[in-house]
Length: 335
Image (cartoon, rainbow, N blue to C red; front, side, top):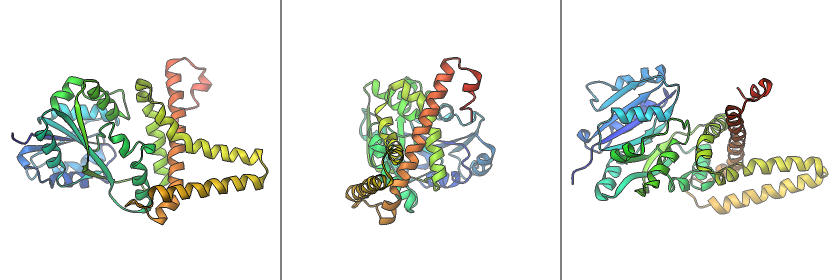
């Protein structure tokens, strides 16, 4: 059985600082050059100006497609599928760098197991600074929707599906601005198809390095994720993600209810328990360090508040689009 022809789809929007590393890693694959193509679908001129240098006779397997859909990622991925010729469609993100054997590993799995229709793998941090290490630790537990959740769906930063299955389920839902990979996986799973998560298939992700960027990414993502949450009634992950923010709000409220000494004692006890749990849970992990452990609660709260506020904003938008609200009220959440 010959290795399948693979089409790699990369969607890029405002990715001018990272797209080159992504493309370079795809060009260095050990997979036969005749057996794969790279299709980069770009939604902004700055990224296009950086990426188009790769569309030349030196890299004939690359196609650069420029379109303007204002950051609609599912639409861009569907456009990439339409332009592709491979029997297998692989996906990664513009801020990821893939392992040199990435396509070889994906191809091997799909070639070996004929009943397998999809394969995905792990997402590791590109750098090992304290913030990236902290995010990597959270990605290994189900609280953040990270690696544990990858076993329940294939993230499009590291996944491949057979073309005929993508065609059968209708590709990506273009109404889902965020979480389109969750939606795709669920529709594939509803057909009782067999998919595989293999942690040995690795891509490296360049994390956002500032707390402000992490917060606004979480806020924006959760606000848009309402579409998927309502479609599949995924309420348990929400409760888990916003719990730290609600806990902190409860502690701040206690200051006004209790006397100051009692409130500080309560905060001190909970803070101590938090750090003890961090060291017990993550102490032997390869990404753990004392500095990482010290900032982990701050990262958790940043993500949690981003999720919580994004959730509120998303539901407000949903209600506003469903019901006619007073003009003054519907203007509150426009920004």
